[in-house]
Image (tube, rainbow, N blue to C red; front, side, top):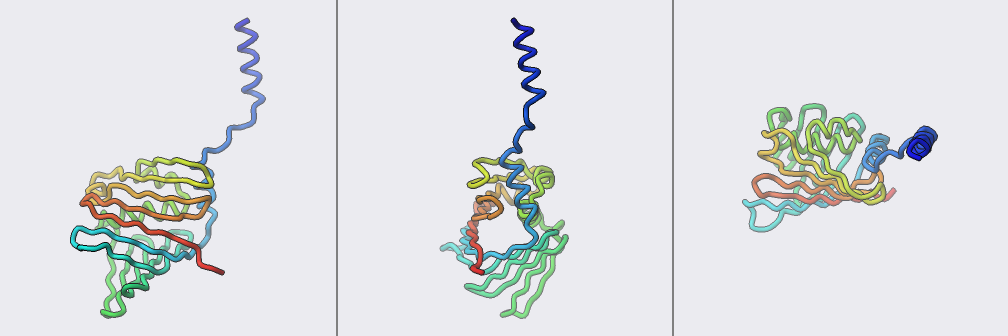
Length: 190
């Protein structure tokens, strides 16, 4: 009897179709197919230094390969561009432009690596920098990231992405010092 059961299970296993990819792998594959994207954002930042949350709005653009541009349109004008290891912040009203190496700013680097790897569907990079937790389905998912690097974790506790398929609907960042931000994203009308 045991031999018959074992033979049946082996035959079933050998003839079975390959297992479906997990929802996380499917979402990463969908995200990796995006060549470029521009969305509108509204971001609420809660900071200990401010008595009220700061609400920003504007556009967020991504180009395959890791270029990200955040254009704040209100309540002030500011453009942050991330290209390679360089982050540039331009403030037209003040006539200022500053560039930083991400390797010198652990908090910015933690956020940028998580954002770029998520937008690019690069699970290997996410797992190198973060402990990754995924829940939900391809149509309604949550991806939670906690930095592996102690230096990064001193600044960023977690980053949470929520989305559907290849569309990210929100990004929540919890900083180690108690500050937080919630960015909601929506596609621009064609």
